[in-house]
Each structure stands twice: as C-alpha cells, then as structure tokens.
Length: 221
Image 1 (cartoon, rainbow, N blue to C red):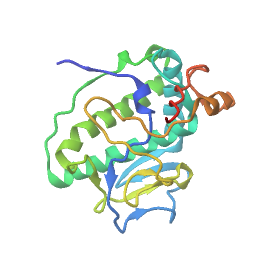
Image 2 (spheres, rainbow, N blue to C red; image 1 turned 30 degrees about the vertical axis):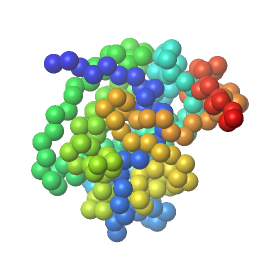
Image 3 (cartoon, rainbow, N blue to C red; image 1 turned 90 degrees about the vertical axis):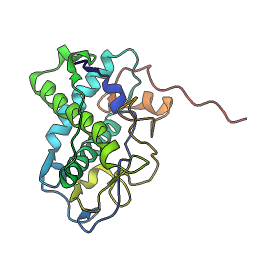
Image 4 (cartoon, rainbow, N blue to C red; image 1 turned 180 degrees about the horizontal axis):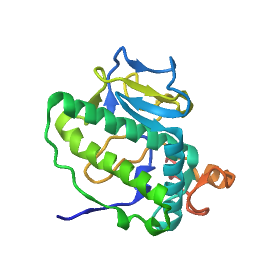
C-alpha cells in the first residue's frame, strides 16, 4: 500500500474551519478546560504540553523544509489545536453514525527533519498526523456538502488562550479565516502574517527560517 508523503508546512498554513453547529455543550468563553488542558472533545484530551511538543517539532520541520514559509509559533499552536479538535469531532460523528473509513497510511519519515526529532516529538507527530489522516477520510463520509462537521451533538471545550470559537465553527474567534480540508492538502491558505510581521518576530516566537516569510500580496489595481 502506498503511504502518503507529508510536509508539516501544510499543517500550519492556517486554521481549518471544519466543524460547525452550536450545541449546549460547546463551551466558548465559559467554563475552561482543566489546568494544563488545551482542548477536550468528548473523552479525548489534548494537553498544553502536547501542543508545545508538536509546535517544537513543526517549527523544526519548517526550518528543514526548503518549500516552507516562516510563521509564528502562535499560529502553529492555534492550528494544531483546531485541527486536533476537528479530527476528534469527526471521530465522534463516525462512531455515532457507525461509518467505515479507509484511512490512508502516512509516510512519517518523509517529513522534513523527521530524523532530528526526539522520540517524544516523533510520537507526538505520529499521533497528530494520524488524526489529520483520519479527519481527511472522515469528512467526505460525515461532513456536509461543504466539508463541514456538525458539532451540535459533540462536547467540545477549548482553552480560551487559543482564541478559538466553536459557535458556528472551530475557527479563530475573530472570524478572519476561511479554510476547508481537501484531498490535496491538510489545510488550505488562511490567516498568515505579512513578511514584515514575520521578520519582526523575536526568535522565541518565530517558527521557521528567517527570510522565508510569505511573499507580500500584489497591490490592487
């Protein structure tokens, strides 16, 4: 079986709008998760420590990927939480609807910088990529025509520090993103910093190599 080659750069292009619908158990700005928790979906939990490990691995991969563009650690962290939560929403819907999926295996070793990851980072990336692969397989089966996932029957709690909203969609609360999963990429283009903003980031907040910020958009005629 052919394994899917991967680039972690595609996982940080923006925040996916994948889950939509407002249910009574979707907590936004209300009671936050327990201390140390980034997000909870049903019985699944993503810890803040896991987010940090994944962010370190992704930023290391971006530095080793000549096709990648630099961004901020904050955008990476938000993307990680949003995609993980969307994948767990999809998992809950698959279980509720008793759907069978064909999840494509991933070629983890094809990720730029894979051999330089620590064992902890490799395990975190495997788990995260498996979730994204599951999400891509699930969306056509349990999503609507636009690839959206209904969260109204799923318990979703996201730490307010990530500024993510589940009222209407798992997306940035400022509604500045517009993305959906496709078969061609883990996530499409969404919010990004402009080149000046990226280059102005201190080293502690930069993710990727300096000088690889996205090109500035052309001026409107």
